[in-house]
Amino acid sequence: MPSADSWVYQLQEADINALSQTTYDIIVIDYSKDGTDDEAYTNEQIRSLQDSGKIVLAYLSIGEAEKYRFYWQTAWNDTAPDWLGPENENWEGNYKVRYWHDGWWNDALLPYLNRIEAAGFDGVYLDIIDGYYYWGNHGYEVKKSANRMVKLIKKIRENFNTNNEVIICPQNGEAIIEDAGKKYRNIYWDNIDCVGIEDLFYNSTKADKIYRKKILKRFANHNKTILNVEYIKEEKEAEYLNKSKNQIFPIIPYRADPDRELSGS
Image (cartoon, rainbow, N blue to C red; front, side, top):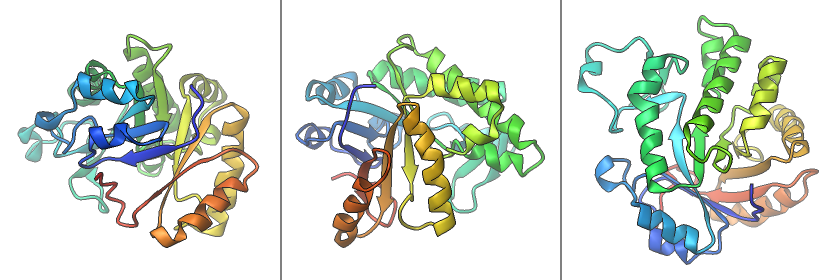
């Protein structure tokens, strides 16, 4: 992965022209301005960001289905496919998925990835990796669920025509390197380029901070870029940046508003 010192994370109403004028090295945005197919960013728009020196990654939830996405079929409201799980009680319209089922790949992920690749994104920023842990506590073994998630990440990389160059960046779920079997841990390392981490310094317990930093040191040892986003007020930004600099491994920080909406300008 190319070297980078800064990043921005905007999932709603991202202004391509404004972003092209910024100094961010990495940009993570939705494939669409408002999440719908009608407002999908064009190849020309993504290329304009790249021409200004940016690495551009498309957000993609692989552990939950989102009801407002193009792939959602109205028939599922009455009769759910076998891969569709319960609604996330914290995010209305988001549903857990049995991500190892072929139906999830064929009905949602594959057409989604095709759109992302056609638009010319440099890679994908994969969310709900920790969905493996959910299923590990809902009828399935954690290790097997972790292995299945790794297999899906590998499949996503292999789906890109430029799989040797595409950037794969999972968000959270970093404990997968402990929960997956040894074979799958190695596959995971071989198929990711960076990791996105939420709430490493704020909005988490002291024990969580210690545990996660210990794991992230292993990511750094494997030469994986670590992107961190903290949902904090602007007045805490200087304190946050200072914390991010004083770690035993490099972190690329980004402050977002506490509402977690990740809105663009």
